[in-house]
Length: 357
Ligand SMILES: [Mn+2]
Image (cartoon, rainbow, N blue to C red; front, side, top):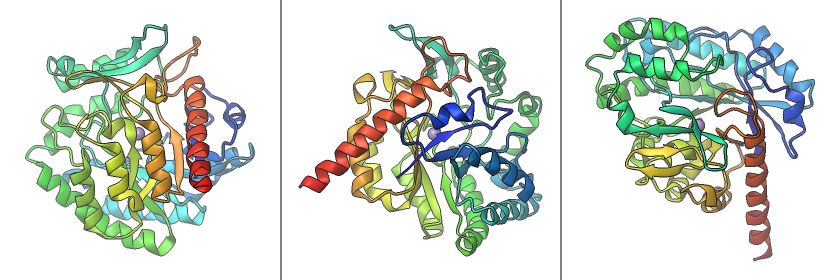
């Protein structure tokens, strides 16, 4: 496995790369170009600049998250072919810079949603929380206001002010787009993009829904094992793969994460490893990574990943805010550093136990 850490770039992240470098065993960064809007071509010079900023700290650029998909592609409007062409050019440019993995999602409007970014735990740390009962009392515009009001000045991907301004027109283009239609649009996209990925050796990794159920009546097609299997079948290629985000899929108690790894393990191209704690019906918090702190069996998931032979990039996912750190909610240094150290411990134990058998 390659141990990675998400980082938003020198201008976009509060954490100096050198601090990431000091986490034991760290191989590299899963990075992004924050200024890029969905649909823009990522130029080689820009990618190389990002790459060099990471390599000067002796880390590697292990992949990108995310190269966002333009709404025209997801909603299937007339402009989609042009934006798919742009996407293909970005894939080619990333390959030219030796970047081999792209995480993306195919979700209308809401990439992720939470209702409290600073829920105070008993120990004084803060977690992100989602509560469906709160969402049920809001319209999508109010949801934007809620997230924005808690961002503490950090730019939260997917919840930028520019998107809020376009919100009503975005809702309009998704009118009439059902789950079946959204799936057809994904199929249209993948059938054009995956052959290029095969040609230039760049693996795609679709990220599941967070939370993994419908919100605000918008269709969701990456919620569970059945959805994932359907997507993998569209183009049966290792380049058409998944991001296994344990905290996204795992927020639905009906999703058995160990079973999912066993079923689709050969198509996992990227792993987001984190725990969630169930707090009630469709209510959960992003707990510390440790199994005993949340509801998922992190040991079982790691064991399953080793058993299916996963050798791609794995990173800790959202952490709590601890020790008074001032950072983007979910993306502080301290709790994610503890998280990855725990994952590395699980991994070493699983591998060594297997060897001694
Ligand atoms: Mn994730």
